[in-house]
Length: 206
Image 1 (tube, rainbow, N blue to C red):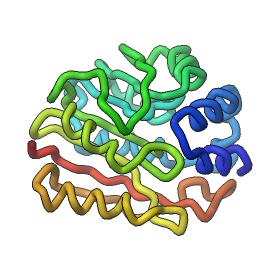
Image 2: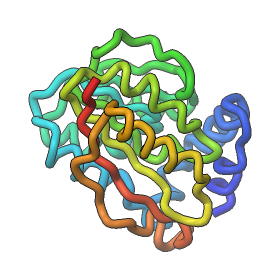
Image 3: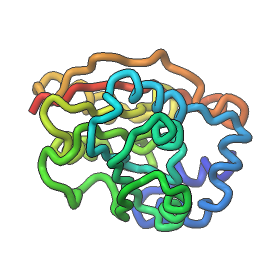
């Protein structure tokens, strides 16, 4: 998938923003045609662990909101979507499934209070070409102690060792504990069968 390759090749937040802005009006159509399944597996993990009345929730790297559509249908509310692409945020805004939308990039200080969110989810974003592994620092900070941080992680040849090392470091430091991990699955089996992810469910401990 040419557009996906371009997105993964981005080396700066500005480059990633430009690529997603240009792709925003075709993103969902093209990924769905490729069999994109990450949003539904992410939503299933959230529904299993996060109570429907848990609020507020942060969707970090929300894109157009595919992962939030099934959750909104199940009754999840009080959701803030954050993304670096204004084009993708416009797609999300048109769906009416977020209470608030914020334009910002992961990897630095986020404009939220410490412990603000009962749960934070991040689907397909903390990955090479998108957000650095250090992005977890502030996602942990803004998630309340005892809350949930649910994220996807690549488990394929396109992954970089620093990402997996970072997740082990947070566990060893007592910042979170992983309570569930899905099997590794093909994320886009028709369009990009080499891309594989797992969804990780962590309880925040700090």
